[in-house]
Image (cartoon, rainbow, N blue to C red; front, side, top):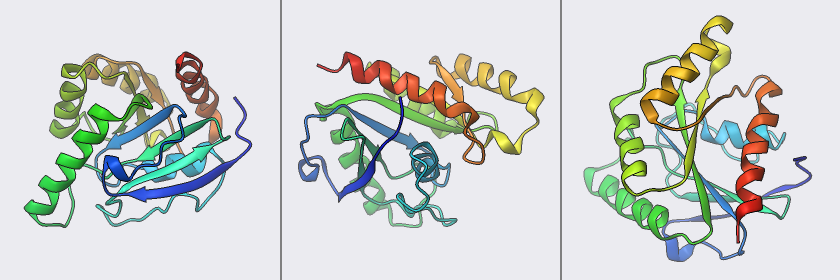
Length: 193
C-alpha cells in the first residue's frame, strides 16, 4: 500500500463525538509516550501531522486521521502515566472502553510496546482485556533503533509469546519496517465490510 494522502480529522472526547466516515478504523493503544503519534507521522511520511511531545499524557482525546481517504487511524490517550486527577483518569477509561467496544468501524487495535523494556504490567493487563473482549489486534515493538540489531527479532518473538498476538518491529528513524505494517493494515482494510 502506498500512502498518498493523510489529514487530521478531529479530536473527539467520546465515541458519540467521533465522525462516521464508514471507513475501516485502526486504534493505537499503548503507554503514555510510547510513540503512537510518532508512528502516524512516520508511516504517512508527514512530520507534524500528529502532535508529538516529550511530556507523557499529552494526548487526552481520541485524535482521528484519515489516510488515503481509505482508512482512519485513531490515536488514543496513553495508559500508565498521566499527570491528571484520578477522576479524569476514570473518565478517560470509561470513554475509551466505550469507543473500543462499540466503534463499528474499528477493524483492529494496534498495541505499542517499548522494545527497551520487558512487557510492563499495564501492557499485559491491556492485552488481557483485549483478548477477553475478543478484539482483533496486533502489536508493534517500537523504538527498535535504541536496542541492538541482534535483539530485535528475539524481543519481537518474546513480546509475541507474552501478548499472544502477532508483533512487528518498528522505528520512526528508518522506514525499513513500514511495508510489512502497511501490508498488515491492508489485510484488515480488504476484509472490512
